[in-house]
Image 1 (cartoon, rainbow, N blue to C red):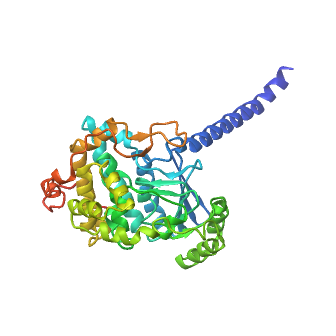
Image 2 (image 1 turned 90 degrees about the vertical axis):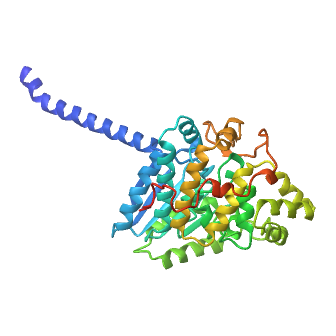
Image 3 (image 1 turned 30 degrees about the vertical axis):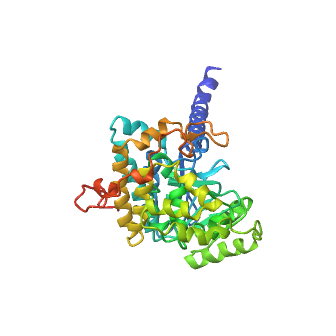
Length: 400
């Protein structure tokens, strides 16, 4: 009897070891699925999945620190042929940066306000200069930081669920993440209009304005991703052909007119002025319902942010992406030293939307702040902050 028990011991130990291994694997799987960002390799594709659905996949510093080196690694890997980025949860691709963390850090002078913007802008630059084809599936809310991790890539696939905006002027910031580069390069003055008013574009309009390169039904994205992964040694041309094939088959809202089409002429005229004072004057003189609506919107924004944003886009129109990101870093640090941003957050500008259960939300308009007349804001605000002077200290001279 004792002999049989002794003989069974090795088998029991092996069984116990197997149970421990299985439990470890189970825990690893749970940890991976609970991670804020998932990084995996499927075939020849590197897949980035933003995995904070309760926070609408808002970017925080730890996510940025994981994504940046992985993109650099995949860029050098001969077995990685393309990079795909997407979000989880069905509501958002990425609703922006983790404003709550930045606000709390800024109030106490924490180094996070430097580290976050440096890390985010370096990531934007890595995407903009990536040698491997970069495909962003911008399904759902795509704002602020979410635009930064998509718009600079080779391909941006919008869906009927896509909602685009750069709403930062409402909270004492400016449309950063390279907004000074891509916004003034949109057709006419529409980029200036989007930057200053924070206007939202939905669905196919995101394609029509030039933010997206393709439009595909949301429910087709899993099949598209599968086909992208299945491509053999995919070149940009092969990827473009595949995206085009999906794009051509999509008929959702095909006959629907561009929401801003009837206002294009006015946008190009009214937002072509050299100063905010002139824009305000033009809007008042125009007097049309559209002009009055924009004037009402601008009067709810941070006056300082409006002036900074207009100058940012005018300067950025002739800069490289790298030059713009350096300028924007200086801008971000100046805003962190000011009061508009913190007052904007204090006034309750972040409304919880779409059942979001965490306090990471999309900026709305300023309604509770005392908004001084734009005319009373000095025209030299930008220069006084030394935001563009080459002598201004900048810790992100190297974006690599």
